[in-house]
Image (tube, rainbow, N blue to C red):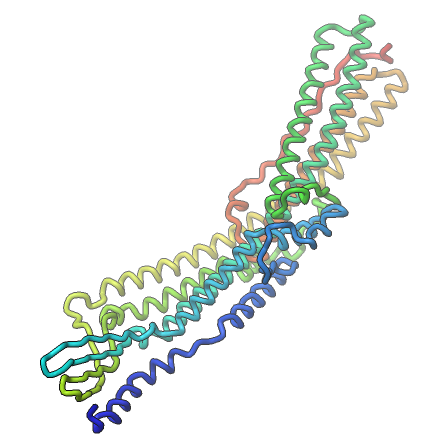
Length: 485
């Protein structure tokens, strides 16, 4: 090598590579990811009142966690059901993996692409000519801070989306628990309705055998008993399906699905008195809006760099080294840049601005939807709670009083046994109706609480609350008058 060129070539090479090496420092991604998990976990616990799920360090064998089995042993309350879901639902763990994907993308965005080394050799009679080149994209260096900001916005969006999914699942579990509990209690009530229908049938057969009841009266009562048994079968099927839906949300299978429901919060409890400020609270807490704001930030940063991308995309800078056939070496800077003759970036700029305007409009519209949902769910929670309280505190006591008064008239030989059975059937039907209204009130309140916890469940907002039909007790008509023989 020509020794006079060696120091100069070395200085040129180091000067060209210095910014690339400086930009290549890598943060501790694992530590940053732990911070992400801790931040999401703290936010989730503040919103849902439960510790966030944790991805286990050891490989998962797919079994039910020992902590979950302990919770299942003595019956399952609503809060315990949520804890089991956070322990065993693999879908929630899969959501947490999205944090790692976003953190890795942010770490990559902080690094420029690896420089490209090129080499070629040419063989001559007098020797071999060798050329070496090391180049780095100028665009990636210039836009490195912007890329990092865009990736940071994407990470913030993922954090909000993951937290929103966890919160939504918690409230799905609570709604499913309310359904399962109500379904079991309805089965108990319908079973008593069948018993009452059977008792009426036995009495009717006795009267018919004695010639005190007609064939149509006997057939009508038997048809009512058949309907009651069909209703019991339907109620049992609904209870089974509600239970299995809850099992899926809990992540349970096998022998872990034999749990029993215990305890329940009063569904007819008065709504939160702070609901006068429900709109502002919903907007402030919204994770959907947080994710949308992150998308707006990313779109804004992209819109600011599209003009440069068309010009600098093919541009590069680096160092070139060449050895001529006479064994002389030379080194120096190398670069390339595109001439913006055809594509000057106008189309890309228009596209980026249009995407930004779209995201801004979506943000405003989302806030409007959240406010409308808050008002609708607040009214739904209030009205459904009022109906449930009326059914439990007014309608059901009236039916119970009717039963007592009818029994008194029966004892006074003013009515027969069938009016007593009919009044009892009406009481059971009213009790079933009250349970259905209480279930709906609980679900309506959970829908509102979910929105205030930051999760906009559009499917819940769009589902119009349809109150159950008024109770229609099975007829237990029979011969009127005094005591039946």
